[in-house]
Length: 173
Image 1 (cartoon, helix red, strand yellow):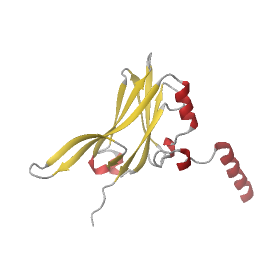
Image 2: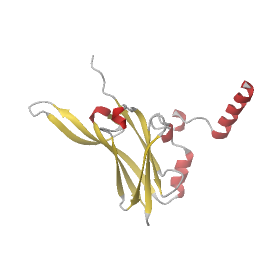
Image 3: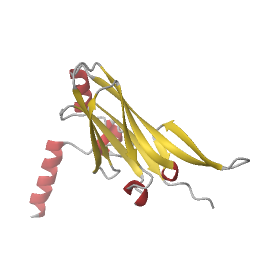
Image 4: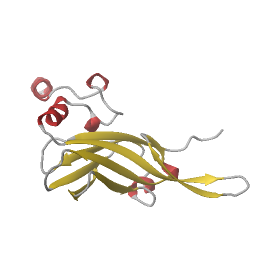
């Protein structure tokens, strides 16, 4: 029985390929954001292009003569969970000629779909807001490497992808 299971596991690896990782040009540790060849080939085959940027909308405590909360927007890939209100996925589209639909899928560090957003592409720059403060992300401290895949219409392959990391604050000793 073990021999049959081992054979099945080896056959599955040969057919499906090895898991993606550093050798595959990954972004973060989330396998959903690995630079897979079919992602690049889809971008090369289509005239429509897109670039995604992650922007954190932060509330940072400010001390000094005028204490309070300072609101900041910052593009990046690493965010502290305790300062993050929302995340914005900003997608800049190029060569969009007709009515198209944008789909943004957000995957947790474990690779599960967290949320999917769809909207008609009516501008060259589309922004999708992901609530963090007060959401399951904050409540369950869902830290780690997240992945965002962006699709156009109902295409099976993403046109672009981006990753970001949510982390807890460092503890002071």
